[in-house]
Image (tube, rainbow, N blue to C red; front, side, top):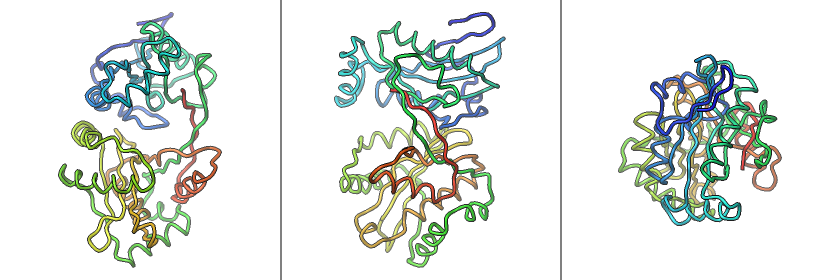
Length: 333
């Protein structure tokens, strides 16, 4: 633990009591799931990362929480994952990486000094363990407290407020989205939610075929299985499939914790693309309806480039047409 006056930062290899309850009740510009116990367990079992739990407190009151992971190449599962951390670490004379996902979770009103102490503690912990700070996320409002030497850039996402009524969600969309939904219904496209691990495995085969079509890397079914077995029981992980004539044509997963979820892994078949079927649009609406019915607060559309070029322009336009709010943050590493 590091402390000065009434402000302290505690670092632990185990989550403190009621960790998830405090994270779920807190606020965060990105997914709170990245700082939950289920996420830390998944990263340990799937990749061999060692989680560290950071808590910033003042006068005994918890202010910020964050889960970071220690990635030492010789302990990481998978040759590709090991090399991804080994080469940069060796070039910097380090023994591995320290990384986290998503902005710190705010439990009580936080100001720049809280974030500064957390950043310093992360840097000190990395140096103490001979690690490089490899990646993370940080709020733009507190970018000035980041440690000199950390690489950083701006990134953005689209956030949709699920607390609106369904009528308000529809009204907030661009007319092109509503037209696509009507076209999907007219074409007889249907959407169902995956309910068993066996169904998820069948969907994974479909996703691999789609990924191969546009050169997207897949990490093996164990990646999906870990989300089903470790994230889903304690947090959120759901997969939706669009079908036409009994054939899968598109798929979309979401995951999260507490009152926020984010998109994960969008896939579309060659037939869906060439015949201009609107399965991806109907999937988006199905997810919005599901999130609203679950009483969730936010759907994160999982990242857009603040200055898009090439195909990123189309990606951003597709996400913006659903009526959300643009949110920008800082990525580290």
